[in-house]
Length: 411
Ligand code: ATP
Ligand code: MG
View 1 (cartoon, rainbow, N blue to C red):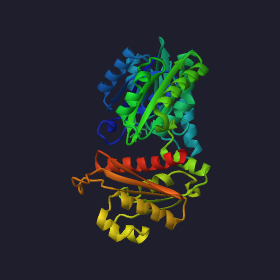
View 2 (view 1 turned 180 degrees about the vertical axis):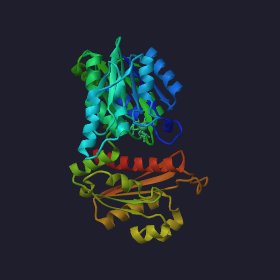
View 3 (view 1 turned 90 degrees about the horizontal axis):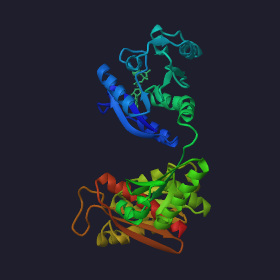
View 4 (view 1 turned 120 degrees about the vertical axis):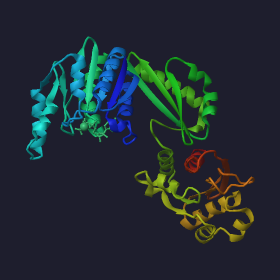
C-alpha cells in the first residue's frame, strides 16, 4: 500500500520554512505499514496544485495533503481538490459547529470568513482539529483515500494522531504489522559498518538500512508480518545478528543519545564526572546537561580555551604546554587529571584539538584531537584525526568524548 504526501505552501519552496510535516507523516505512515512512495511540495498555485493532486491520485492509493485550509484567499486546497474529485463543496454542519465552538470557548465572536473553513467536498468526512480552528477532512472512494490536514505542524500532528490515524488503521486492514528498530552506533565509519553487515544488509526480510550522522551511524531494521508478535520477533532476530557483528559500537536504540546512555551508566555506577573542554568550547557540557537529572553525576564543565586558562584553572604546567603544545597527548592528560582533582569527581574528561580551518601544521593537522579520561587508579588518552569542517570536527569530537566515557563505564 503506497502513499503520496503533498505539502502545500509557497513558503516551503523559497527556503523560508523547512518542511517538517512530510517527515512526520512518512514516519507515522510507515508505522502502519504504509510506504511513502512520493513526497511533493507545491506552491499556492491553482494549476500546480491541480497537477500535483491528479498525479498523486493516479499513482498512489493514499494521498495525504497538508496546508492551505485557512480562511484566506491563498488557501485553495479544498477548492482545487473538490474540482479534481468532481465534487461540490458543501457546508459541513459538523465543521461549522466545531469552528464556532473554538471561538466561543475563547469568548470571541467568530469572523464570517472562518465559515469558509467548514466547506468540505460532498461525501467527505470531517477530521476534528484538536488544537486549532480549521477542521480537516478525508474522502474514501474506489479504494482510494484522500486526506487533508492543516499546515501548522502542531495542528497537523494532533489531527493525525487523534483523527486520521484510526481511519488509516481501519483502511489498511488488520493483516500487516510493522516493527521498526533503529540501533545507534558510535566509533565505526559508515563503510566499516557496511562491511561488517554485508550479509544482513542483503536480506529481504526484515529490511536493513544505514544512515550516517556526525560521529554516529544508525542501523534501521524494518520488519513486516501478519501479526505484531511475529514482526517483533523477526526484528529482534535481526537486531541480535547486528549486535553480534557490531559489538560495543551499538550504544542505544530508537532515539537514545550518547548523553542519555552515559548518564544512565554513571547513575547506575554512582560515579561523578567533570569536563575540561578546549576546542569544543562547552558543547560536551551542553549535551550532558541536556539530560534532566544530570546534576546527579555532572559536577562541572570548564572551557579552558587559552593556554593561560589551562594553567590557571586546571594546573597544567605552562612549561608542558610550551614543550609539547596545547594540542598534545601530555596536555590532554594533564587537563583530565587537573579537572578531576579540582572538581573532586570520580572521572575527569578533557579534550584539546585543532578544529580548523586555520591553525594546522604538517605535524599537527586540522582535525587532530586528543581526548583524555582520568579515574581513581588510571588514565587513558586517545588520538583522533577527524575530517570535515570546523563544525563537523567539533561535533565529532563531542560525540567521541561522550563515547569514551561510555566505553570506560561498560568495560
Ligand atoms: P492557517 O489556518 O494557519 O492558514 P493552513 O492549513 O492554511 O493554516 P498554511 O497556511 O499552509 O496552513 O500553513 C500555516 C503555517 O504552518 C505556516 O506558518 C507554515 O509555514 C507552516 N507550515 C505549513 N506547511 C508546513 C510544512 N510542511 N512543514 C512545516 N511547516 C509548515
Ligand atoms: Mg494558510
